[in-house]
Length: 471
Image (cartoon, rainbow, N blue to C red; front, side, top):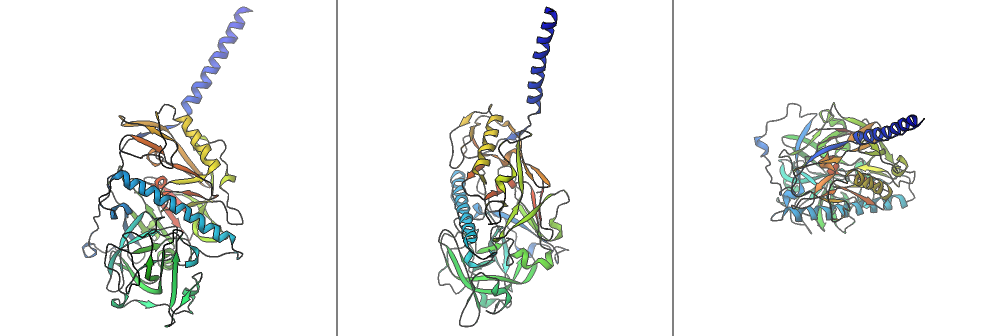
């Protein structure tokens, strides 16, 4: 009898040991190679005449993207990073303001395409992070333009200027372009603006206002845009004669939102309402980020999730986030209900190129953060930094193991590289978990988490895709 009890006791110990071992071995980690904050990027944009025409240029565009930090000079990597976080916070606040105005209106579907929607631009304090060089007019004058999935209207500064901010290139003069043409007040294009104006010459007027008090105002016009050596005629743009506020460097904005006045919507017939971008991790890659318009934008390896519509606002790209896993296990406390877009236009999850740090509704963020902390207990903790409350001292190390993080979208599981969620915040070995909570109902998947993926926007198919290692 005594022998049986001993055997039973030993069997129980063995069972507990095996269950602990199995749980431990099933916890998934991946390696993170440690880098310091990236140095300020440099511009190496080739002259248009030196670029061979794309043989598929009639239905495809491809262009390099550059980070907005390249337009800042004599600033340290740490200060550039702090400025990036400040822009980020302003952008998130601006998005909340947009949604608050949209959901408080009685009409069922005010668009985000026109000037009364306070669309957040890539040039205001709540900045978009990437720009390219493109030609405006005939003959083309090449300018820096920020690209932004969070707004729709295409605009740039124009002569004559009542008020214009400082930009890197000469201000565009429409009088010297043979393809420039004002849009009549009564045209369908003019009526797509939320609150169009009309001047004495019966030319449509636009205005884009921002949450930080910045604005641009001028003539709504048709003009030719040239990407490298591929021309796109009759694009409706705002020609801004009065531009005031916290703008920096670039000449204007190429809106890539979902509204009817965005560049992808306007050129839908030619490029089939498809575009994609791949944003590189500047701390570990010297390759440029890139963007493609047309059928070539759709990667064969992309995993797609359906786009859903906000009944109150058509600018943003909403997706369904069902859950998040850490270390291979679903995070308890995170469910699809935390990310649901309701009929009043509140809540939901958007994909955005101009927000850096992913924001999650507070309950979801706390659950995710706590799960990551449990899985990263072997890492030495460090003080909080800015908006980041989970940081680690990894000084003296070259590589560490960190828990895996996976987004579970409807129809698409997206496994993030470690560098997309544990990022350097100084040059002393401090790294932070690159997520943040928000008291707003809106969650935003930011560009740090998108790094290295080719993110495909297929408006014709009403879907967004993620292709790993797409750069």
